[in-house]
Image 1 (cartoon, rainbow, N blue to C red):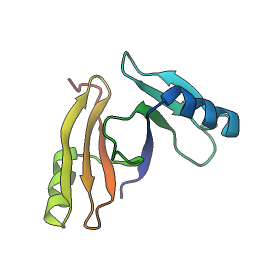
Image 2 (image 1 turned 30 degrees about the vertical axis):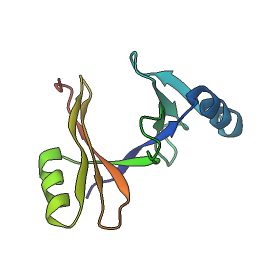
Image 3 (image 1 turned 60 degrees about the horizontal axis):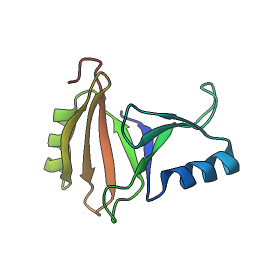
Image 4 (image 1 turned 90 degrees about the vertical axis):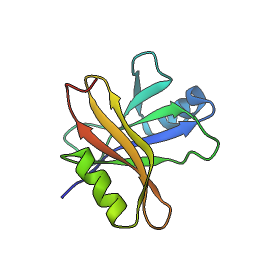
Length: 121
């Protein structure tokens, strides 16, 4: 079984959006490298929930996306395609962290596929 492990909130003005969530909910942020991408810590590790990120919007239609942790991203991508989904952003490496791809389900909802891999290049 695979779980949702991460969310991404696209924003035209990431700083404004981060301030909103920090003020309303106490979220804390750490910039990820030089990207316009900030990891969001949404609570204590010993409480239910997931962490995510706020990122600079890359496309005007870009929705909030949740990512599902999978043991093998290639296998998961094949399962998506065989069962009526579509890969909309191909597998990409997040160096030293893992691999990410995005898909739509048969109803057009977008999700990420995430595979941890410290050797990703």
